[in-house]
Amino acid sequence: MVCVDLSTCPTFWASLGAGLSVLLSAIGAGLGIGISGPAIAGAGVERPEVMLKTFIATILAEALAIYGLVVGLLSIFAIPALTTIEGGTRIFAAGLTMGAASLGAGFGIGAAGSAMASATAEKPDIFSRAVISLILAEALAIYALVTALLLVFGAK
Amino acid sequence: MVSDTISHLLRDNYLIARLRGKRSHLLGRQQLVALSESKSQTEIIGLLAEGPYGPELSKLGSESSTIETERAVRLGYAESVMSLIRASGGDTHEFLIQYRRRIDAYALAGLVVFKAQGKTWEDYLATRQPLALMNEQELRRLYSLDDLSTIAREAGDRHLVERVKGFSMTEIEGERASLVRDVINGWGEERFFKYINEKLSGPDRENCLPIAGSAIDIANLTIILRSKIIGASGIKDHLIPSHWKLNQRAIDQLLAATEVAQALDVAASHEYYSRILTGARQKYEESKSLSFIEVALRRYQLDLSKRIFLSFPYSVGIVLAFLILKDNEARNLAAVLAGVAAGLPTDELRSLLALQD
Image 1 (spheres, each protein chain N blue to C red):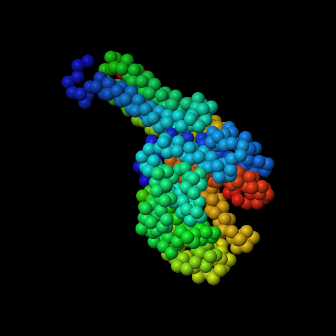
Image 2: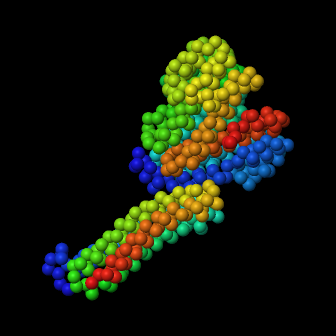
């Protein structure tokens, strides 16, 4: 499809949405890993036995980038079939939802993961309770993933 | 304020995780009580072999003196703190440098007292504070000076010179030596208090101020009490002009007391410090020593540190809280080693320890 006016071009909006999904999710994942990583390293220096389990924070942060990538790829695969501006804006909204949510969840995972690693270094038996806030931060991104997938699959 | 918190979160989380991990390795109340029941220093050193003090204590021979053993404990403590300093950055690193400047005052006070007592440089060197910023060369130069004012001017500032005026190296002994030590230590505590009060803000200041503030207030209280014990005049000239909760009115009341016991009653009825000085008169009359005040202050600072650890973790307060806990552990351990070596009864030895509830 050749677009004359970008503001009404479904391909433009869908491409922008796909890009934002991957970009913002990667930034969110970077924040999560960047904030929690040093704390995990610090905890590992003093208590090597807790390092492996506190690593869950960086794994959950990395998952954000994967969610963003999934939404981004599905959006790209949907672009050739787009015929209306509504379809394009749905994919844009999906990308923005996924990206912005990953950004927030990334900061949450970073802060909660850092505190969890510190607390576990001090009291290893607290891990199973401290990890709950981390999972709740990850859940924010899962809500966005579900919403984004529904938006992408409904785009025409 | 928010920017301070974010900078601690982004920059200091490695350090904070490490010191929380280190906190879990600190000697607990039960362990210290068990150590105080040991029969000999060798037994204690054996029990501590696996911990952070192990490397330094293992270098000691079987005939080590109490000074050498205490020095090994202080070195173990210093190594632990230095590893944190190396891991720190930005404002937190500056905070730790200021903490070490505070220890300079303790090194200087020790130097003056040793010099006044006619001890050799080697004797002093064996007891010097390993965390102080002043290096061996500087300390040696200071040790070669004979005049207290000159030492104060070279190592301190005009405030310190003013505060030690009236003391002479030839008459620093007994309680007077303790008074000079308190005056110099108080000057160091004041510098640290001023740094916290003026340079820090938000949760950083809020968490650190009670620890630094109580230190200068109790330093002033001790200076007043000791001056009364030896009947020194011009007490006001030796006091720290800054104060936290022990304001000018309270200081005037303490100065107006005619004897130590009366001054202790005034201190014990203070609206803030009554919490740590209850029964002070009785404790003084039983022991005829002011060392219980130092133990009471340490206990109070331990409580504050424990509270900081339970609060929001991203402030420099958590660093100071750990340093207080670690310093207290080293002092307790040194007291146990010295007490066991001197054959002190267990009950008497435990009264010298500041233990967490």
